Image (cartoon, rainbow, N blue to C red; front, top):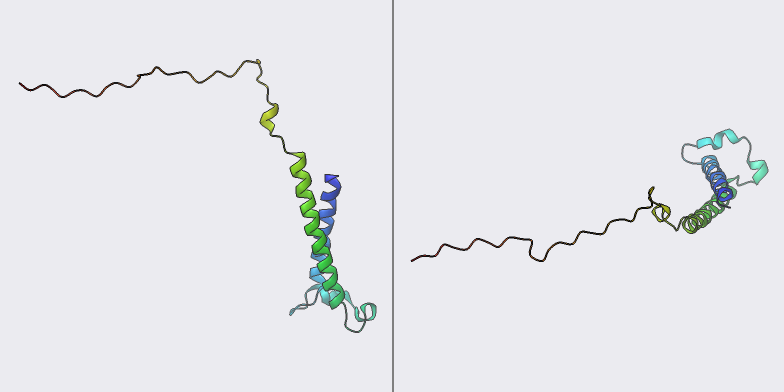
Length: 113
């Protein structure tokens, strides 16, 4: 399931890139190479169609990203360290206990007579 969604994500990314590059801009972009689009898309040209297509593809991309994130989180909820077993099956040693008074006392001042 996750691999299928990942393939769909890549296809959507490529489709969005192509749809954005085909749109008209101030420098015309790749729309200059598309030929006579007016006859296919109507008198206004592909402007409205490409804008709607870009929005639809972007919406599908965002939804697919959220679904992919959910599936990755659900599949990988366990940590790798949960499955590690020591090679010799030894128990991990406990923290050594320290004696009650391990720090030395401060030296006392000399007595004056």
